[in-house]
Image 1 (cartoon, helix red, strand yellow):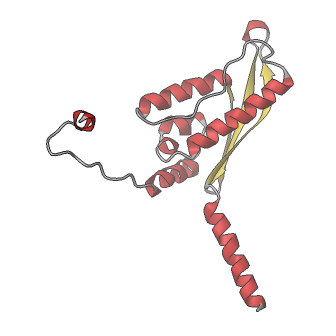
Image 2 (tube, one colour):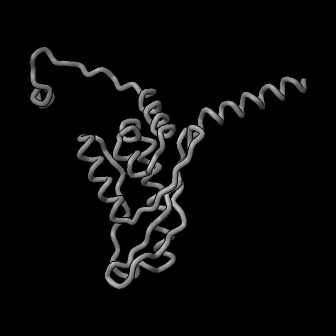
Image 3 (cartoon, helix red, strand yellow):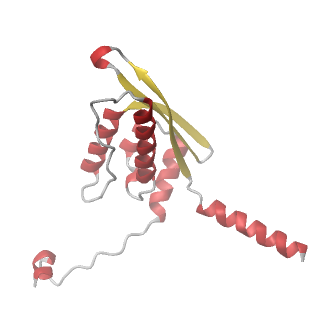
Length: 162
């Protein structure tokens, strides 16, 4: 009986490993940089997976640029939104902490998307080494999109309207 319990516990651990994401990301360690009108906050982004890790720092405006690049590279793909820009109190500790959590959620949503995770500009933004890039490409290959049915010479948009 003890072996049955041990066997089921082992199966449970294996199932949890299969459910855990192969790539994880954490946004932490906000730092204020610059002075006067160039003052801004940067966040450390730590990615781990495939026996490798990467760390880089980015400011909020760079998240907007990479989102724009991802939109251009994958038209039609719905990307998560970024937290709103704030002009007043943007250096308040509560705001900086909340923004960091929202940026982490944004990145987690990006790396969980089967198309976006394998785009080179995301890997470049996150400064991923080859093992993480390979893990991202493997994730995207595991997802199979349904075959596109072609109408019999008709226009799918006009056919849908009738």
